[in-house]
Length: 198
Image 1: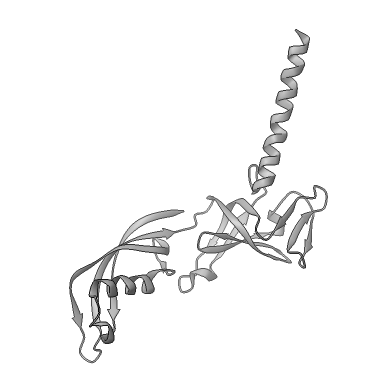
Image 2: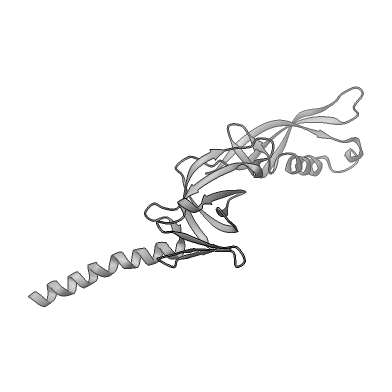
C-alpha cells in the first residue's frame, strides 16, 4: 500500500558542498540518502518532497561535514498481507514468475498461478496452462493477492514477497476480463429464453 508520511532525520553534508546553494544541496542529499531505503514502521521510501531544514546544521570536531536535521514528506510503499495489488510480469523462471509491484519484485509460485498444470517455456519466457492454454508472459499485467511478506531492511529490493492468483477475480487482466464475459453470457441467454416463453 502507498501512503504519504512526514519524516524527520539528520543528513550529512560534506564540506565540498558548502559553497553551493544550501537548500538545493539539502534536497539532493535527502533524495540520495533516503529514496529506495526501508524505514521501519513506514516501508520503502519511493520519493521525497517538501524538504525543510530544521534549525542550524552542526559541524562535529574531527569530521568537517555538517549534520543538518531535516523534515520532509515521503511517498512510501509497504506491502500488506492480503492486499490485492496490480503488477507487471518482469521475469519467468522454472518455479514461477516475478512481478513488479511498485518498487519491489514479488514472486508468484507456479502452484499459485492458476488451477491447471503449467508448462514452463523459459526460452520464450512463458508459463502456459496445459488444459486452458492461458499464458503468462513477460510484460503481462496481473492482479494478485499478497500472501507472504518478509522485508529486508538493509536492501529492500531483496525483500521476499509471495503472491497468489488462484482466487476469483485474480490473474492476468485478460483472464479476469474473459471470466467476466463468460459469467455475463449465461445471464443474457437466460433473459432471451424468458422472453420467448411469454
